[in-house]
Image 1: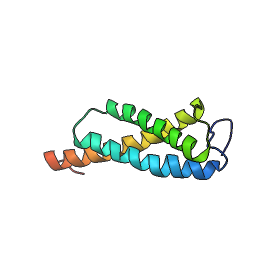
Image 2 (image 1 turned 30 degrees about the vertical axis):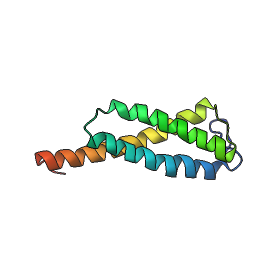
Image 3 (image 1 turned 180 degrees about the vertical axis):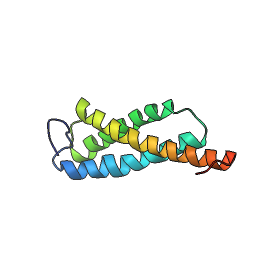
Image 4 (image 1 turned 120 degrees about the vertical axis):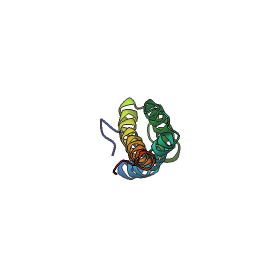
Length: 105
């Protein structure tokens, strides 16, 4: 998937699927859950999504010869990982609030 928008190296689609969607998405989802479980504010989801996206870009660079400093690719990674982290945060916060305050799920 080497396009003008996203550069993931020679095996682009599979690298994107493995690193960004599966590994990065799972990491971001669990990170969002842990932020919600410790009652920290939502703005921290943004910070951790930025850090996880940097780690994903480094893995793609180190393991699959992708371009490291690609702003467009980094922003796409951030958007996907932010969505996964926000989903984990919202689902966990909703469950915690329902249990603690007796609200309907």
